[in-house]
Length: 359
Length: 77
Image (cartoon, rainbow over all chains, first blue to last red; front, side, top):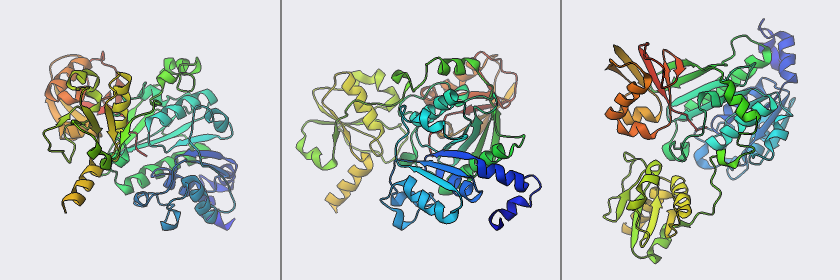
């Protein structure tokens, strides 16, 4: 077929390799910064069945890096918008969109229908869910993750290789690692790391020897430095997951927080009296709120700093955009400190509001 | 022993460098971490793995290599 001619002329691929790609079933979880280039190259390569899972909606701030989308995609579900774009790119393959969240209820059933799972998610909760479900269903996972200018790539659970938990056994403390929307990310980095993930998928399907299993590839786009770290398989990790100590069966191992959390809008602050602001970001984060009634307690220290919180005051907890502060308020509510609210939109919303008020 | 310590992700923001040389005379990774925690107290609050000469090691491992890397998990996508 003309479409795959550039693949077929490669002696390492040929018609037989192209047939393997056509017979492969790959599920990509997350159609964001990593998911878009992954999906674009896998669809182009003629992966026979391509699953796309994402519950999220396309926003304008996604277009800086999420290359499958354009202005007309804004407001649409990412999985559905990606499917439409990819069907134009390659109408000869089957594309299934799942416009929903990956949960402990739907994961196992879904994974069974695919040969390879690609992790293009943006949070630890889903990453550990993917890892544990992949162990239970015996599926390899192509992992990619980014932080600002740095990326990590690996292949887990492949031919008796290590899993993500062999590298990072337990989810990090809640809020200790900020996500892209809070810290930012270089758009092109997601293209580099996502493309490397697509490459590993294709290597596995073609049966190449040197799949990135048992190795963590680290790339810094600012310094162009790379490191490859060897990871050993830890049998205990697999035994634990297989015996039920995993996020699918034990909610205590999950990083999610389900309790209803009190939030407040910037505009509603005027209705409150005796306000105490609590900044739960790391100490170095900018911009700072220069007010006498503001104290700094980074999220990961809140447990040891409860004595600094005055429950007779109206505690307004904030971070950069309102995610970590929600975690903090959830924790405080569990300690029966109920006069606390997470500031929606974080300090960025507050400063924007104050600028409007003073201009 | 002269070590080269590499910091990844948000750890490099705490140390304000991607790598640095360090003179070290103790024996274990755990003792090395104590030195680093003393120098950079904020590191103690972070999750990361330690690699020695590109192999993940535990805190009990002896420091024999020259290249130490501190690797935090990334969640972004």
